[in-house]
Length: 291
Image (cartoon, rainbow, N blue to C red; front, side):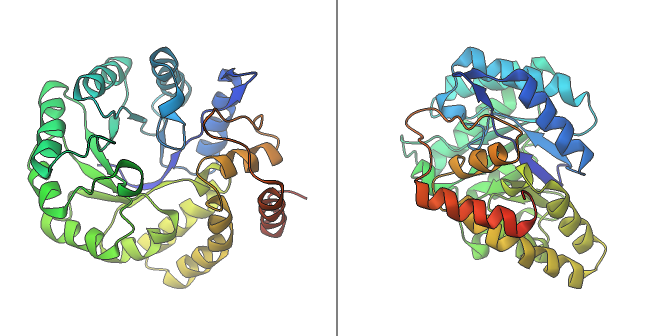
């Protein structure tokens, strides 16, 4: 259902508040450059530091700004099933096209607990759901066998896979079949995942270089692997710099260098060290994104 170059869009702040105007402009920039979907309130959107009111509002802004030109997959995950259910209900009622739901963090549930968490939300809210597996942040790995059980629920339509394991991504595709949308949660793994039958990426680099990520996926789909590999190798040095410190700090610094947002993150996130900022700035210049 969901495929292509989907951006995990940042939440811009100005003087500590959500910058609605900047968010709307970022969405226009994305759509103009071929992005296939918008994910507000994901990890890159600093969902964990948004109030519930801000979280709801960011999703509403994204839906209004996109105007059905591409899918909006709203981040609605939580470590509390009740809270994730409330967020998902709101996204559905606001008109989102799907919900991206991170595995419950900190609690470290069993595989059965993970299954029941997603199952009860999917059965309660009739919205397409994409679980998000990122063990490095949650402390728990959603195993391929559990994903295969979830894939039998009609409105669990894919997974954002950020385990860092190509073998795990391969096994999910093998178990779940070609209709299930396996999306990379790591920009670097996008091209190899496409070779296994993955459907795309929920991307960080697409915040600043959306046309290249979209072009790489389009080239792969067209069988032009020479072009796809050229774009992969072009992006990798910049991808590395976007993760030189914890996401989304570097990508927000990069967007500020491009004049698109204020360079603001919320504590406990903090601005980059001077040395890393200069490394990122150099990579941005080499890429041609700033002069």
